[in-house]
Image (spheres, rainbow, N blue to C red):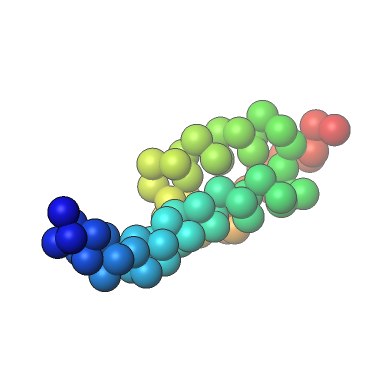
Length: 69
């Protein structure tokens, strides 16, 4: 049991950094004012699967049409 706890504690910082790197693009897209709600939802769903690549695409081509406020 102690061995599992030691492994978890030793890997926790790396796992935390990886989790933050996975969640950051989702937060950035969710807070963006470049696109409307429906397009933002599509970007977030895509980001769940291809995280940083999707953020790069979002930054390059996101304002495809005016906001639907």
